[in-house]
Image (spheres, rainbow, N blue to C red):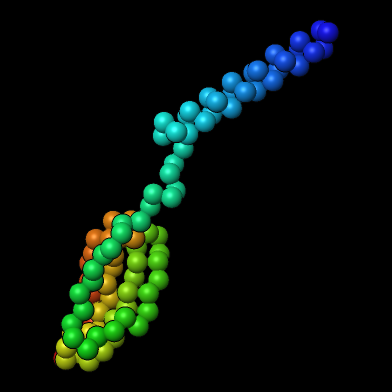
Length: 96
């Protein structure tokens, strides 16, 4: 009978610990990985330009744009992958 009482007490402690961990996660103690993303974002390109390559590096989406140089298509665009905000552009031009 003593073993059964000890088992019931032990299981009660496990249940209480599980409820405590669940409450900790719900209140915000654990990071929410599913809530990431920024929805829709828009990057405007000059007419005739296309995205030739896209890659993510350290939280930054890097877009390499190609097309006619006279239209200003030769660029690299940096976009924050968490907020969707454009961080900057690098225009590639031919030296005089």
